[in-house]
Length: 180
Image (cartoon, rainbow, N blue to C red):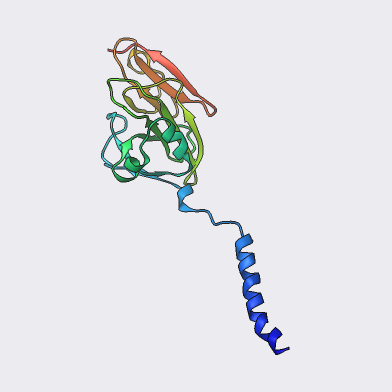
């Protein structure tokens, strides 16, 4: 009987350990999108090379697929355009792939967020070279660029090379326009 009394606390601790092991794991901060502009004064509407720094939550595989170096994103920053492309009041981020410059085209992945987590990742329908935020416009702009009630993305170019990308809630719509 005395032996049973000594084993009882040991059995309870094993049972408690088993309950803890069977509990669902807590959500980690690795699921959260923690991104910000390296230079808050960088205008994503005027500059094609603003940098975002931080972690992309669960979108790591989609960014690595286009060559985004996640270590560089976390420590120094990677080119990105922050906006609200689906007009839900949550920040969204467009990331061009490896080799991004105005001298060549690269693929882009857009992270749509909700409550600090990745809601969806989508690809622009074509590659880009000089990506910027396309602001809300109440009337068409120069060279026939469209009016829009929501922010989009633009790849300004020369000749017939300006492309505007607007998200309609389900997919990206791309349109080509003459430019200077």
